[in-house]
Length: 464
Ligand code: MN
Ligand code: MN
Image 1 (tube, rainbow, N blue to C red):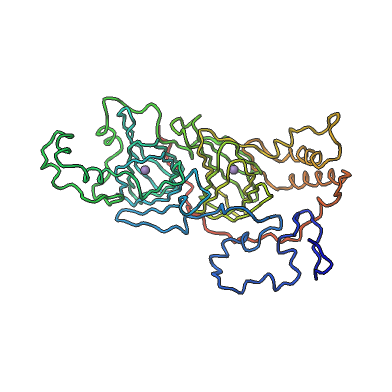
Image 2 (cartoon, rainbow, N blue to C red):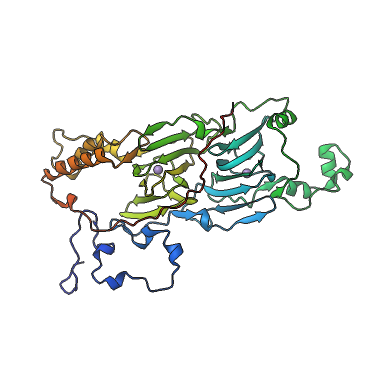
């Protein structure tokens, strides 16, 4: 509260700094209050300029929604490695647990299954995936960067890195408590079954199991070269045939659902990737200067994973609460269902990321769309309200935003539209006239360009 006794009375709330007491470095009168003399690691802290110096529009009270595979410990075995960010380490992430795995050439993730469904996006190289459905129908497929797979809960599967350089991918389990280090492994089960039962079950003498592995493998190095795909398909063929719907999806090869000069969006959910009944996902590419516009998702929390480039997001909640975070390759974000957010490209290269939802459909609501289709003037509707102003702004801005899912570019056309909006707002005789055009003096954090995680943009030929 403002008091005459204060050395520096608080400013009135302004556009760009709406809170009381005011937050943000812009309100600090003694510069010494801004320094950070305590113990610190500038390299680590410097990756999050938005935490070090939040925009003055941020207001505290939001749970942490940023995490990163870059800070997750690896489990390394002969053949590959994995690291994960589960709800144990990332409390907010209740619907999704994330795993980042690398299999070198000949590296095998052994035959296993689990109680959760597994969705994955390939980020590098080539991988051979195998799965068997509940009707005894096997599928084997070789996947490359940009491809997805989805294994329904309980279905047995295995993975193998192929020549020349294996593969890397990111998994999303449809349950935040899932752990990649705690799956049902075929080695474990066989080792923990009485030998006479094994003999009876498989119809072979007990001696046949004398040399089985007594410990699980999880990831191991195979020295047997992977045969050509058609050979394996023949070896695996079942009388029951093949699964009617493939468990892999070539998302990177798909025509974008939406393409603007500022980027592209490709969506894979149960409407086109039919088996993916519990995970909906979109691959978003935002060009430099572009932004994934302000929106929310009415049906599910969003688990966000950055593949390339750098970005900045703010999540808005009741309270109000608002928290801004920076994103780099390998980082994870988590936006709770219905909470407002945006993601802007802060770098000079494409920002490429995945939006992942525990849902059968991709759904979103666009703020611009909503405001553009709200009543502006109607009998009995109060004139000159803030809402009316926002509606006018939305109508004006409709010339430089695009339909769902939107990516907005702040180019010259956008600037012109913004000028028109400001003019329209100035003519409104609102209670706080003028405040909406008062520029914030808060400096936007500068982001240094980082090297993309994966430099290869090339995709192989789409598989039939
Ligand atoms: Mn698995
Ligand atoms: Mn979103």
